[in-house]
Amino acid sequence: MNENQDTKIFPQNFFWGASTASHQVEGGNHNQWTVWELENATELAKTAAHKYPMASRSFTLSQLPIWHTHRDIIQDPNNYVSGNGVEHYKNYKEDFSLLTSLNMNAFRFGVEWSRLEPEEGKWNEEALAHYKQYISELRKRQIEPFINLWHFTIPVWFAEKGGFEKSANLKYWDRYIAKITEELLGEISYVITINEPNVYASFGYLIGEHPPGEQDPIKFVRVFWNLTRAHRRAYKIIKSIYPNIQVGMAAQMANIQAKRPHNMLDGMITKWMRYFWNWWFLRRTRKQQDFIGFNYYHTDYYRFEHAIKPENPKVPLNDLGWYLEPEGIYPLLLRIWSHYKRPIFITENGLADTDDKYRRWWIEETIVAMERAISEGVDLRGYFHWSLLDNFEWAYGWWPKFGLVEVDRKNGMKRTIRPSAKWFADRIKQL
Image 1 (tube, rainbow, N blue to C red):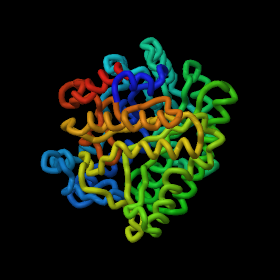
Image 2: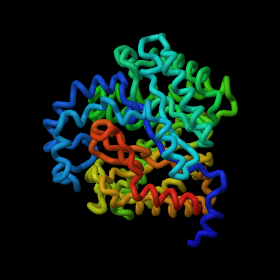
Image 3: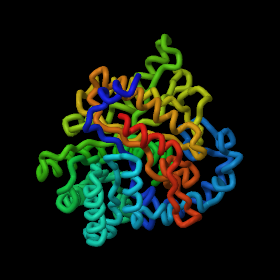
């Protein structure tokens, strides 16, 4: 496909951007995650060689491609503490300049509820002013802000009340959304209410690898259901004040396929996994989705005998041992468009790749897949790479490197643009 064809595929107003999340980059947060980190860091480090932190992936750390070079940090308790983050909270202007140098015209970021309401009913005016200035600085650079209102972390006081386990607690969520709408959304056109509710509910309440670290199917159902209600309520609150703001959420979706395409049993488990993982939440909130935002990292192949554990090819793998199939985003885009006929944004997409070995290939294949989907009528309006910066990757800690920009946390948080990001910046100009 030549460059002239490329310019005809992507619309002129297409958003090219990168994503971050407040807790993963800001530093200095105090929320239920920071409490959990300090309580579990020693145990995560101690058991690292025997138990992979994400139990849903069928790999052990000794099978990771980078285990031999990263074992020391993976077995260091400090790896599992977010601490100062990458100091994005104070260095955001420098990071916005990086966006400009990468030819990006959009940025997805999070606001931290625990900063804004550190105590129940008490608002931090300094934090509100910070995020107002943050949004203003993006606008000055002609970068479209996509604001994410909630990305896994909650105030300690809200967690102590049971968080999203209790429907009665949604009144606190409503108050938070109303405050954000009043204070921060005046210069905003796109709002993401909730990030990956399926991941939050399943990893916190089924698998137990995220806080609160429980394995309780009943609580899982309650939390997942309450998050659908939380999105619908946020949508109503925002639209009542700013009816023209486009509101959606960021679903975690996988390209789920049958290991044996013509096997009826494999087909059955595949359909179930697609419904549970990809569609359950969206089907219950479809009337409150002005656009469909989704995060793509995985193509997973299911065999009936192995139930909910995927049986994926062994190469290529990213640093986390995840199978890489970037082109899998194409059939997923077609399914999303077929289901919902709403504008689509790829709100996260990337890979852990310390040596920058696969990242250019991943992005290049993803661009081709997007071109194919758009050429078939899919209304795709934006792509956000995960992540702009190397960040704190939840239960994995600091060692996985997802950033277009490398951050040297031992050398004054020095930022260095990776070669793949420089290539991507040039490619954006051609598109």
